[in-house]
Length: 313
Image (cartoon, rainbow, N blue to C red; front, side):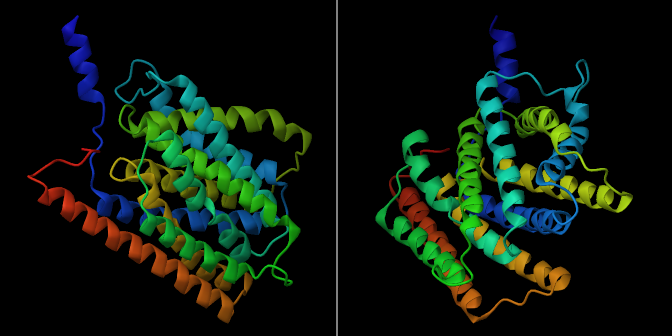
């Protein structure tokens, strides 16, 4: 009896408190996720959002197929928390589908900026569900980032569209995805989290896509594959990142996705960020840098207290 238990523990990834490694992974993930979002915006003019999401999750599931095959070294469907996996997959699909729907009405920069309210949701949810302690300075840093988002959106002007509710709801679903990722990060392998998310997502959206089906061209299929590959890579990196830091610490760095979205938006759609967008981005970057600074101080204080290990070690 002790041997199987010991073997199972050996397979479980340990959670470590290495926030700067987690931050680096989050920054890398934004490159892939930004590419996926911009490509989805491009396809939204020819395909319905449900069909775009279906192609995305179908590619996702195909990539994860080796982990679904019993009796192989890559098999990853053994889990202790199937319920959380189902919830995470549904939340991830909801975030993707709702955001793609919003892209049909909003410019990519505004839609992405609106979706950056997710760190506020993450910070609040991490207290209730993860038991994390969020200090006043971190709350202020998150608030400064949100001020930057509102500067970019400029509520009350033509830049603000009622369809902005879509990215906001998408951000809430994404925050739930991140919280569930963190809840499972100490007891589930990243490949298991990813595999279940692909299965749940493709199962749900496959039931919806027949009602809105539009025959895609080869051009649409190729870009759909790009969305699937880029989003899968981004999601995988996010899962890895949350093994190394608190959700409320890593989330603000997702703001850097705005940079990649703005660059690609200019190259593909000819959208040039205006002065307000640049000013708002400066607030966002300042928020992220200050959060990293506070985390460095916190880690120094933990190491100074008689060599006391981090509570997340």
